[in-house]
Image 1 (cartoon, rainbow, N blue to C red):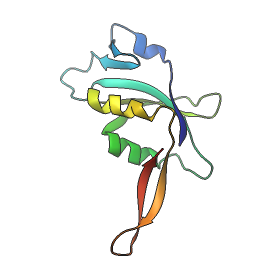
Image 2 (image 1 turned 30 degrees about the vertical axis):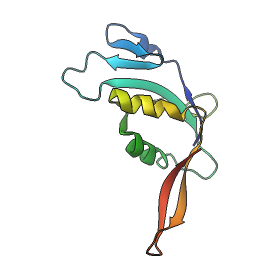
Image 3 (image 1 turned 90 degrees about the vertical axis):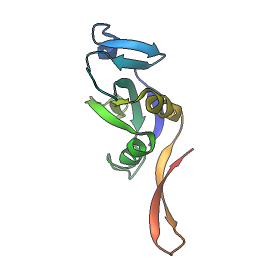
Image 4 (image 1 turned 45 degrees about the vertical axis):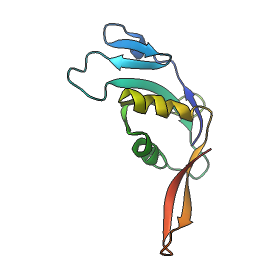
Length: 120
């Protein structure tokens, strides 16, 4: 995945449901008792031969966030999501802006081929 970027999404600007916490990060004030109430809207592009599941699943695991909502595909064929999580997790996810994330095969100490997430 490449070209991670913030997207504007009007739903998050609804002050009856969301509170702006810091630039691009919102708190879902309607989520009573929830622990992962922070949201960010982001888009990213798949690279050739990537599927829609990986490395997205690895990104979710690494940053301890979840997909809150799948949004309509962008005009540039980008995948667009609202991610949710704890504030520090969403802030860390935001660090992907302008970077590339992909899965890379490697051989572990026992000679087994494994896959790891690379971010550059």
